[in-house]
Amino acid sequence: MTYSVKEIFLTLQGEGMQTGARAVFLRFAGCNLWTGREQDRVKAICQFCDTDFVGTDGVNGGKYDAAGLAERVAAVWNGDADERLVVVTGGEPLLQLDAALIEALHDRGFKIAVESNGTIAAPDGIDWLCISPKAGSELVQKSGNELKLVWPQPFDLNELAKLDFDHFLLQPMDCAEADAARLAAIEQVMQHPEWRLSLQTHKLLGLP
Image (cartoon, rainbow, N blue to C red; front, side, top):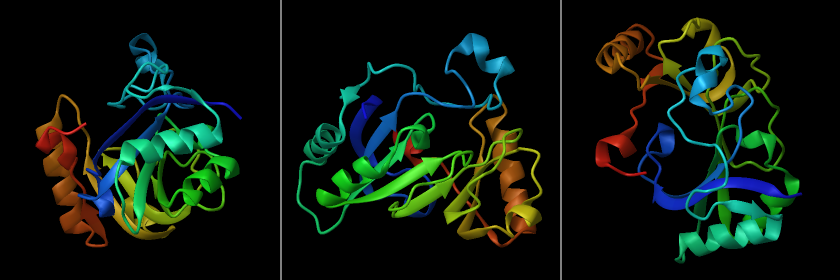
């Protein structure tokens, strides 16, 4: 398989339960809930995406086979560690992530974390699975390590909390009404203590 990659870069994980961990971000091109083109946003299922996942023109972007992509991820990590971390994201990474790439990344010592919208069943071998449901789409993957819900969206938090996840996170939407979204998320966490607030700390720190 040939993988279409938008960008690969070294940073700190900014969201969720692994916030602050050194990680290589492997961002695949393409998504099944929005084309990525601004003219299509108003018609998209997901209209609040804040990520450029179109094309292969980012840092280390391009077309790769499994071995070549795993080698590039290892080169970007550039260091020794008992456990390396790669965060596979998008767009929607499960459109492309498969057994061959999972094996190639594991062979190079990487723990594989995935950030998905949950509309595609996750393959075996993922070490940390984060699902971020989007209203209007079908949630297929109903288990994982963390469920991270961008807020506000029209979901019942009590119902979502019944799903098979270890952690439930509420993340304020990055939008024109960001202050209101943050206050609303805090209020919901105060009312639903099984949920935890997640902030986009990479943006606060000026990291990619």
